[in-house]
Amino acid sequence: MNLVLEIFERNGKHIKSLTPAGQKIVAIARELLVKTQSIKAVANEYTQPNHGVLRIATTNTQARYFLPPVVERFSKKYPDVSLHIHQGSPNQIYDALLSGEVDIAITTEAQYLFDDVVLLPCYMWNRSIVVKRDHPLAQCKHLTIEELGKYPLVTYTFGFTGVSDLDYAFNRAGILPNIVFTATDADVIKTYVRLGLGVGIMASMAHTEADTDLLALNADHLFAPSAVQIAFKHSTFLRTYMYDFMQYFSPHLTRDVVEKAERLRDKDAVKKIV
Image 1: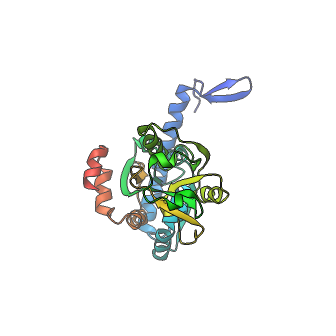
Image 2: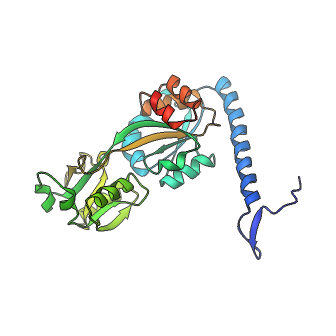
């Protein structure tokens, strides 16, 4: 089929970007690809219900600290389902979901991006302040945002795991935080805390029994909790094993609840049933 229009904007011989028409064509092509994949998924659901692929996009922290027991349980029930975990920033996670690169996204931040998909609240999480055991804050009985503001900070890159909530807490106290190092990975944050670069602020789940040289200080009173949510496109045909994975990840997400959420377009209405 010949299209009598320009799909690409060019700079000489080089493709610069998509034209407005090109963007719409690509969006339609993506939806057609999803529908084609859905047709195959429907067929496989009836012919090979326990075989398939599950592609998930999430953050490093979720992949490293929360998903392992979920994946272990899932793999025992579905040994013939291949799991692919894509790790990235909230924007990368959203792009992977929108493009059809993954089936399910697990997001902890920038949830405003996910307006055009099914978004299911899973659980709330918060942060801990992580320091070396000989750090002055290790002796602090009641940590305040003012006290925390006296030290250089090591935390997540903007857009990761509630950085906006962190900014809000400091702004509310009229304090400009001295963030000297940012990373997308909690393990990297812990490494630089050990090097003495600063005080770490990271997801509480990322401090484990193995981190005996680091002390985690509760920060629930300093920062508002953040939500972890599962997202998938309305056009995605969910296999039975996908429903099971979501329930393993968050027990209240039964198949009945997820199917009801699929039929709703209003996110507030979804929150009422989840």
